[in-house]
Amino acid sequence: MPYNPQNIFARILRGEIPAHKVLETDHTLAFMDVMPQAPGHTLVIPKAPAESVFELEPAILAATILEVQRVARVVKQVFQAPGVMIAQLNGAAAGQSVFHLHFHVIPRYDGADFHIHARDMADPAVLAEHAARLRAALG
Image 1: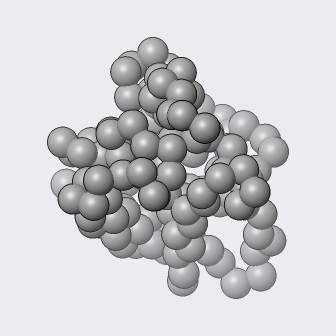
Image 2: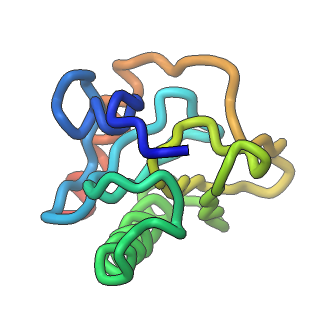
C-alpha cells in the first residue's frame, strides 16, 4: 500500500497532533508512546515518509538506528531497567498498526508481562514527566 501522509505519526511530525517529545534531530523524532507497555516506552521515528524498513533510504535508516541506540541507553538508565526491548514491525501481518516506520524502545523487567501493543492510554501528565526525565538525561 502507498504511504498515507495522514497517519498519526506523519501528523505528529507536522505538529497537527501533540506528542511528548524526547529528542528531535534533523532526521528523527523520539516521543513517548501514549499506550505504553511500561513506564518509559518511547517511540523513535524517521522524519522521512516511509511505511516500513524496506522503503527508507539507507542513510536515513542508519541515522535513525543510531538515535534508537541513544534513546535506548537513556531509557535503560532513567527507568533503571535491567533490559530494553527494541521492536520494529513491518506490515499488518507482523502487528504493525501505524504505517509509518517506527521503533519501540521498551524498558523490560524480570517477571513483567509482555504484549506488543497496550490497550489503555497513559495519563498525559505521567508521559510529560517521563519525557522531561529522558530529555534531561539526554542533555
